[in-house]
Image: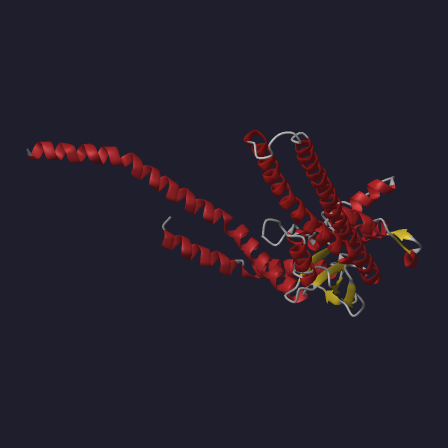
Length: 353
């Protein structure tokens, strides 16, 4: 069967079964229409929070403290330039999600948010998905619901550097209370981490300064001891001058480190006093919500096209099989005939010679 014959027969067959093909398209369009009607509406709200992050603390007070303590030579690193707590990661963390679903909502008979999220999932799940059976223990229930919550919200900064928390649910009544719990938990954990980081920085620098002070005291005691043992010896004698010079050099080096640590301690104390962020909700997660519902027209058009294509392929399957089979056989025969043609050509060449 040649390509031209195949095209002619394809057109003839499609024309012959055109009414059945259109009927299949209508059936598929109806099926997808009823499927789209059963898809639940979604309600989405975006709330913005400010401020959650601040730039490096390049304030004049810190620089003045550093200058007074002798740390202005650039040998120390400002603690405010260290790695900061990422509010987006805090918002997406497992700890935050589990804390949210572990809260109870008074307006829903004091039920756990975990119970409400699982109930909504089971009520509006896809036909091919299985229901989630609620675990017997609260801890297992919270872990299961935390996995579902992960796909229901997002946390990101917008172009104006405001944190946006977007939450979506199939239950309009759940959107606002769960959004407020999300904001509360993210703000709480972020504040705790910031304060904990500042306290850790202060404790570290405090211990560092104390340690260097002890080293300086040891050097002072060594110098005093050497002075006391040279009462009856010339003080400019080389065997006493060199050890004293070495001690003085080491003391200067440790003193520079101590000054740098002291400046960091003062900066850590400054940060500790002002690190707690002031968190204010600018756009509250209140109605109206963004309602999401799939377009029935799109489902009908897609169903009609899909039905027509599948039914056409079904009616043409026998013709396509024969066409492919003929092409394969022709290719095999051509391949097998190549050696014989080659032998015939060689014999013709010999006869001509």
